[in-house]
Length: 90
Image 1: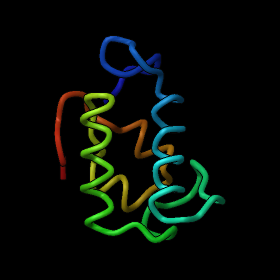
Image 2 (image 1 turned 90 degrees about the vertical axis):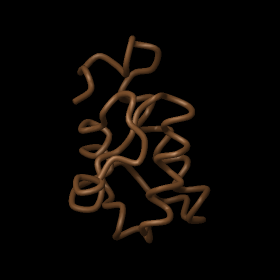
Image 3 (image 1 turned 60 degrees about the horizontal axis):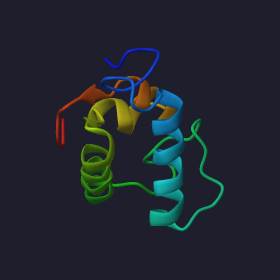
Image 4 (image 1 turned 60 degrees about the vertical axis):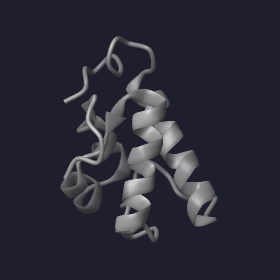
């Protein structure tokens, strides 16, 4: 789990990462209405989108999403459950 105050060594807050996830998905899926309370699968995400998003998060923030949480819960919950330093976690 990520610390409540931020990611890794505190370089970015969880809120910063959540915003980045939402913006990335809006761009990738062409849907400007996506929010942190949406479900990844419900907005059109799929396994390839998940892998690409995790690649972006790993390269940018050094974190990765948990696949089950991302598929089952809101985007905000998926961000809260991220793990530092892992790529393409399942």
